[in-house]
Length: 259
Image 1 (tube, rainbow, N blue to C red):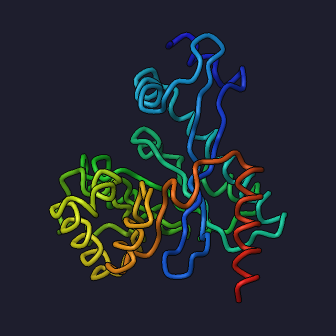
Image 2 (image 1 turned 30 degrees about the vertical axis):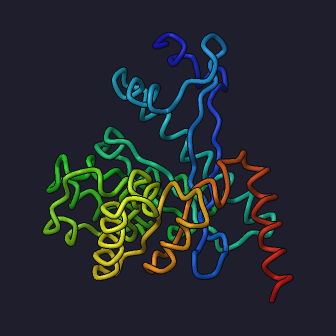
């Protein structure tokens, strides 16, 4: 697998798919999240949970992360050129990328190359990654925030956040982990945790995205709790760029037809 992974970029075996996010109150698609996929010539489809840690271990994650960011920005420009404006692009950062001294400069260069406004790009970091070195995270995220990009904490609720640090982080969005969202309609504890996260995030003036939304009942619960956005198979499966563009365009057209 390591040998195959080392050749994956030059063989064009990586692909990006995009999962739309929906504003719960409006039913409008507000943005997409870029998700990396690997189809190895020798090994077939390898899940990100397997190959991402491996790429970090062998020192390939920075190169792969740059491929994701560059491709996502190019595709966001393609969405805009096709008439889909006002969308945001969420891209996941790894711990190794976060430690690169030139990260902020490189992000600025990629955005300039594809004419992407900073507030259209949202960088996602996991809760555990940020809290592993909270003081350093405050500094690095502050630097990223200074160039105008949005910042999100992914998989929130699964780590060990200190609220004292959370309020110091210059973040814009909390994404509630699907582990809680999946059972909000059948598990009172998960429902209580999800509701509490939404209330806490709003008290800190943060946007809240629920991940893994798969049923209308889950969406209804999130709506009653005031959750801002939903992401999951109920909204859309992850799609290749062109299919995602068609999906968003059709969704927008239906929304206009009902006004």
